[in-house]
Length: 341
Image (cartoon, rainbow, N blue to C red; front, top):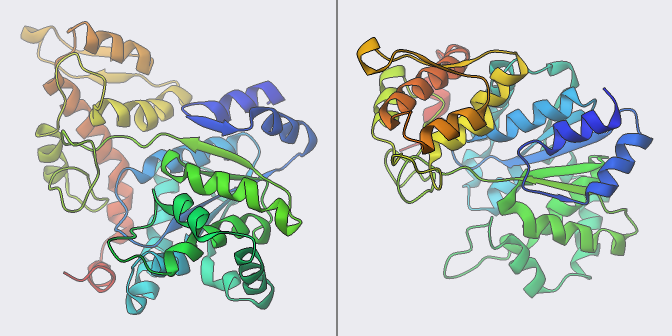
């Protein structure tokens, strides 16, 4: 794979790259660059995680070594009770590799890192204190505002969060940090402040957040039916998709189409497979699509009905979730301990 092919693969479905020129230079200069994504061990993982797992698989194919930071300390800074941290880390340490396995990613280039394994070391903590002398309260709060749940009475912990996320780039020895577009302010914060520490700025890459399954567009635990949990059974998945917000001919804020674009059809396209809509002959018979663009065009033109789309996507999601359900079979107590009612 040449530089342009690697660049095209990494750019696929991204929303912003800071900067593309730096990324191209990196690809030309380094045989095996390193990228990382941090996921805070807060809420229970859901199918939205497939978006960043899919992009990480692109990095692997492009020759990167991939590091996934299971950020337990960050979880505590963002209001996860300290007694639950270890259980949540244990749950994530099973679920995240299972997500990669589900999409057929090469696990040999994947490294799972526990945050507290290096973030409590003397040199790291010294850097946290040092950076805190350069960063204003205003800038720290502004950078974390889209990620940290500050509430009406913000805690000091939320101001430490972006400082640590910036320093992770250096202490994990990476060339690129990747995250959702909600992370943009923190990634820019890192770009601005790492040179003050005598460290280089990294390339920052972001993908969009896909909408949830309700009209609000959010994936929220407080909004029933807005997201599909990794352990939802087939009937629950089918029911949630059946009730999903998916207006006829509308692409905007359509979580069903978004998941199809950013996850399902990425993998089908790469494997040379077609996306098939099973329909009875009386409704026109089966539909077969090669690309997402073909699906979107048929949907906007009214040739693909929302109900048929939702049934087909539900089937694909259940296929993705089957190996994860199997991996977590018998670990129901761990889930209860990590996320008590």
